[in-house]
Length: 446
Image (cartoon, rainbow, N blue to C red; front, top):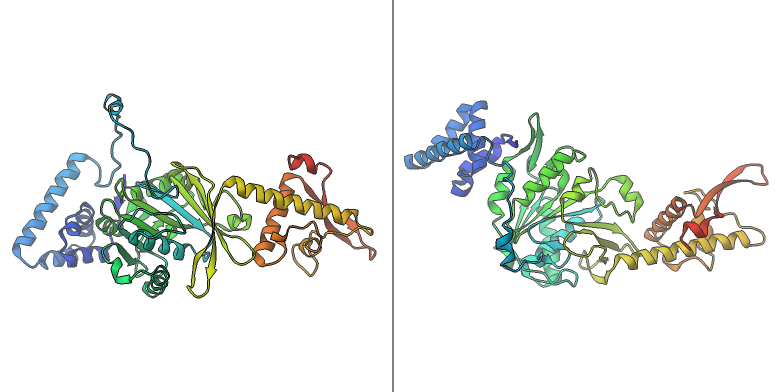
């Protein structure tokens, strides 16, 4: 059962607003009952603060009705709905509806999409760009979008940063910021404890912030939540809790809406670079969502690669190459057409083959050129190999290229195509070097 943790600040805002949708929501009424148990005097002041006696009478009536519903149901207001048996005879008489998308293939309707990447990689800026594109009906990096109303719920960036980014996005797209009113709601949720779900002794518990957000995400709206580590105040490795969190996010929206949930990845995933596991924590994060984006550095010029690593309702494997535009102060514009997963795999395979050719060239040289296995210093494998004619141009210079070179080295080592051996130098010191393994052709599937 999902309980509700009492948030007095959010409860006070509900009373101050006098908005019936918020005030008479099941979650507000349930929070009021729980708050009475902790501080009856405080909640009594709120009740007496109603502008008229009629308003107090109506609130008491709503409270009694809620208690009756809760007693009759035998579970709390946010319990999961019961399973539904499909009527096959009725279904056979109608045409099936194929899955629909807000952004074709990338952002499915009625589902939660996970957008993961390393902290500071640019997720928030790209997500805000996506939100403005959808709210205004503009293309998102060349992809057509379905125009929808959106709530952007920022738990990481405050009002000043959001204002700055929004102004840059609007300027680049040629959109008047005031024209987005009614289509885009931007929320600074950094001002207090705004987690949507917390862990309690009784298990996962929804908060008043969830109720507040649910009141504003109307059917057909989209929601961008930045980010998961703040919205989910629980154990990211607990499969049951993660699944429930994704489910309650899905229930924020109707069949025409969407949730884009931003999340960080762990250090191991960042080091892996081109990992296909672009998320952190339990596999439930990937299994519970229907689409998953992964953002990672790529290229020699600081560009990023946005990958569609999972798509239950469309082909996965598409990717977008994004570059930083200094004048716009955004990742904009210069977009390589989405490449397929096969294209990326072929490019990676070509780079690894060229590295092996460069290693063989060093071994065949007279005298033999040692390729050190040291990761740092003035003479590493990259220093030695990048001057070889066989070495791929895509890995020669620039921090992203060098980082990808070491990722390819690790991949070759994992495949068994290269290995480390020790040699004794003339000064009698031993050093480790990379060499092509005797079984490299089989390891690379050649």
